[in-house]
Length: 501
View 1 (tube, rainbow, N blue to C red):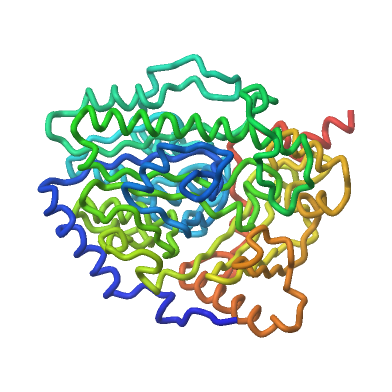
View 2 (view 1 turned 120 degrees about the vertical axis):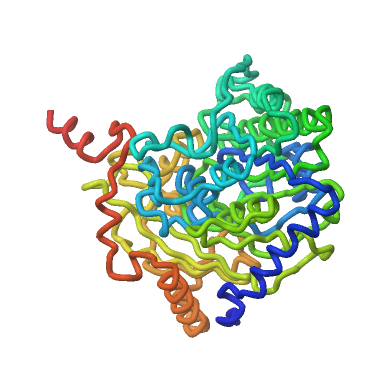
């Protein structure tokens, strides 16, 4: 088991200089600052696109962005839940660097600069539609509007299925373009609510999709209920992709497509057990494709590790602006500017992942603290409270897993599949993700990997300390003081009160 050296892992001044230097070179091809369209799906998992070889989910718009731009094979979020990931994207920081914003349904501290605000000060026209940062409370900390931008939510439509939001994302984007001051560069956050649950159950089958087409991960049994649930998920991914395509058409109509940095991605994996909110490969690995007209070499597949916190400094670098002082992410504009495929920057070969509390359901509102490190070959996971239920307590309904037909089926079995999604986990887990991307073969107790496991743990802790993670600095008690701002319907104290009556 080989580990990246310290030199490879830590940011080098040479790499940062290269990223900034790439901006004027790219801009010179177009002669003016680029627009930015950031299209982010809600709960769309890596690999579920035609560009990644998936045949049962149809994503012609994402595939076009990948074909006419760059497809990334190793993009990750440091925290696989909606609001923590989105906070990381906006601020350019890992979530353990974001105080309360590490948690789901938290406040959004206003001490951290967000990229739309920097762009706006530089003359960009900024806005958003659909889902920006959230869920949580940004108003309590003084934000005038959602940190993702001023909202454009006027236009609605009649969705084809009950689980799909009524927001007309593409038309709202057109309304935004129509209000843009002449000549102003723009930045727009197109935040689809799809494929977030709930779904219209059976909609995939009614649309004529075939159960046999679905590819199931190894942690699920081959079951009609789960296959049908997956087909419902597929329809919602395709709905988001449809609006991405309409947004591309709007850019073409406005004559702005080739001067727009188009980014299509997701906040974390699909809303299924053992994926969303869980520290396994399919939870934190996300799709990413970027198009920028003739400014970047098209048709490339890049294997460099990209953290979603790298988006903010990349957008600012593309606009010719330095990263905000609070940003710890690293621009990958130099990767975009390169004409290489495969590995472009060999130092981008490690990722840190972690979480504290996502949803309620444990006594005292406790979370399930985890930190992990991902290299090209391995995923090492440290569960700090292995006596707690990772998906939430059974009596409150395993609340860190979205309700679904798949969830209902799995918790009825109490078998090996149940254990993989809902059972308690050991303090340490180790997976060879290069051959076991489903993370079903835990190698942590295999003596053959003992030395490598220790190296991974030590490197993870070293990097986390360098990033000021309170859990590594003896201040982990802070995380239990963070207020949950959402409904308390599923809280443990609510359950206890109801069962005492």
